[in-house]
Amino acid sequence: MKSRALEDRLKKIKTEIEDALSRARRDPNDVTLVAVSKRFPEEVIEQALALGLRVFGENYVQEGGRKVKFFRGRCQDMTWHLIGHLQKNKAKSAIEYFDWIETVDSIELVKRLERVADGLNKDIQCLIQVNISMDPGKSGLHPQQVRPFFKTVRDEIQPKRVKIKGLMTIPQYSEDPCDSRKWYRELRELRDRLLDDFGDHFELCELSMGMSHDFKVAIEEGATFIRVGQALFGPRPT
Ligand SMILES: *Cc1c(COP(=O)(O)O)cnc(C)c1O
Figure 1 (cartoon, rainbow, N blue to C red):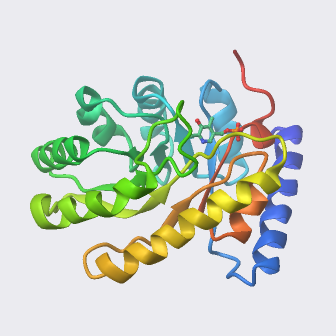
Figure 2: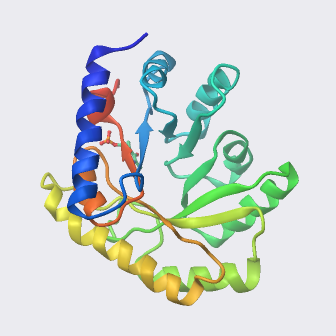
């Protein structure tokens, strides 16, 4: 069930992760590779499992849910991240199937997730999506909305089931990965400032940033989750 091509790409990515961590003088275990399996079939995920990968990212609740159900009886220690936009009416399925929701971007969604998670008796780990480059085509809070957001969550919602663990971003796309650096640095600095004010209430240890073309830069700027699809699995089926 092993795929030689996948094995080679994984080996290369692991080396690049290690090199980037060492350039940044960061701990070798500080980054989790989230294998973005959207649009890839279950067989490809099985090949990734055979190579030791356990953390997967999916964009859609329905597609991800199907895969989670498929693997539930087969592999116990998989972790699933929802990395696509979440509509409030899908909150229940999202919590049932995913371990992490990386795309929380409104107070209304936090309220809904808290209510649903409480009903299901389940904690849900969340990241707050920040539209750091204020790209009109992307969801996420604008940087100046982030502090008021945290203040409202802390003072008014006080969630128990929704565990806010950090920030996530998808910056404006550029061919040149160096262009991503300033956005990733800004996200980290924003997180550091949040810790000054809200660190007693939220851990905020995670930064989900970096994709196939720019994960090395993201690691140098402090990423703890990198979301890698095509560099790992090859071109996505359409
Ligand atoms: C698809 C996707 C990725 C992975 O993109 P690649 O370029 O294939 O690495 C990462 N993050 C999000 C939010 C995505 O939608």
